[in-house]
Length: 122
Image (cartoon, rainbow, N blue to C red; front, top):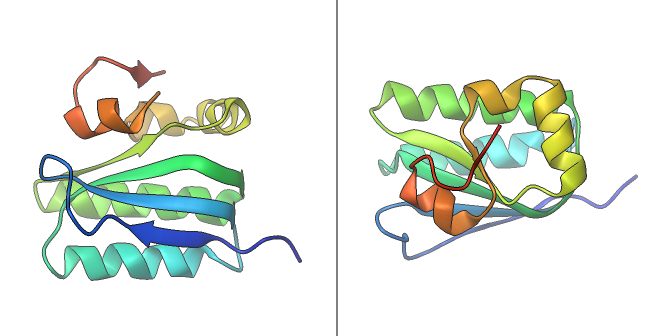
């Protein structure tokens, strides 16, 4: 069994954007934790979310689908979900599966919070 994912949510949003930090491994055993955290945010309602991937070492297809689902749910409420600061491995993975085309992905948390084209990864 790998390292489980640790999730922390910024208590004070940055410019109206809530930052969710992930650390460890996001997969079949842990993706439900992220889905639950996103659900709690959307119930508040918080619909502008940045997921900080800086400390995420691994993500499987279940974790990736959790990102897509969360992005769709945020967009449906007029908000957005963006991914930020992926490691080179995670950036390559996100690109290979086409996620960078559908979910905005940024080099830094700050650029993701700004939600513009600066710092956006393709």
